[in-house]
Image (tube, rainbow, N blue to C red; front, top):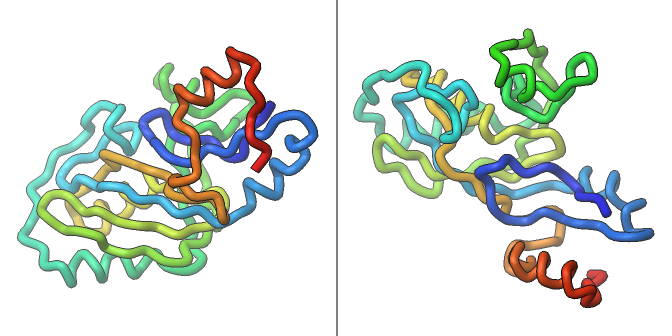
Length: 193
């Protein structure tokens, strides 16, 4: 068994699980475009860049207009340089960054090229921004939340995240985790598509 792309612990949505010979498809599946929906809270920064961390800073959130928020989002469309979060599954010297960060060891991380095909503002009700992001492999939505908040001068972090699709695999087609566990434990056959 294997999976085609890690989900953050607090995230929900599509996680493609491959079994048997289909595990050979994992690299191709990981390269597919992804769609996420998430909520950013402005006015705070977190050490994990999401709701699972500890608050680092608090700032007031000005009365931004919807166009202020839309303009901030537009800056991130296309190929961008993105610094991954300190709490991520990336490795440094053979150890996961999140393992090091939990021990208070932070690494200097270099930006990586990622592609944001489209970012849509779904809702803006201060201090919360709801977004939909269509992106390529390796994009961290937590990093987007952090960077958008920093650009707006308030700081920001991700409070919710849902992976809506991976390529043509949509959340509406996905099995709930409980049902998947039940199928595995009962040796029921798992659908191949």
